[in-house]
Image: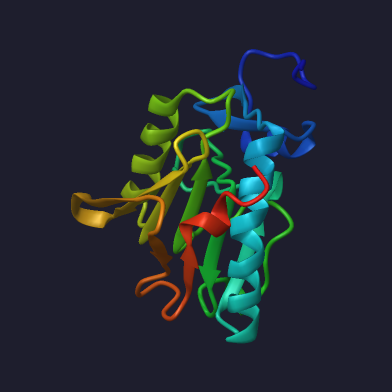
Length: 184
């Protein structure tokens, strides 16, 4: 896929004009490809989380290319998680902005696609924790496992027979790992 603009350095404002599927890393457009399997897994997670969040009026679930976060002052960088959650009361007037979100989400999910480099995704997960995200799930469809990351270096693998928990970010939310990988 070609980048929609041809220049050496891009800004977050430029990225808003680009076709979907790109992140901005220090002024460079980086393609964020996603395969069909990863898309199914993303929806398998986003749908029950959204239902839970809506039922309990907890905040906002943002998926896909629309979930861009500009959190690195003085750096032309916009990251796009596969799924993110922002708790109610954190956005000004509880309104999701038209452009990039400028506060860190509370919870992020990154799904490893067949096109992804797992090291790059793990580095991105660490970036999320570094800007204040309270819970990160890195989902591995190939091994059907989820790596749960929390601030302070606390991590746990959850696999077959396990339950994912929203912990203190989405209290009461649980999801069996088998449901994450249904239909894939």
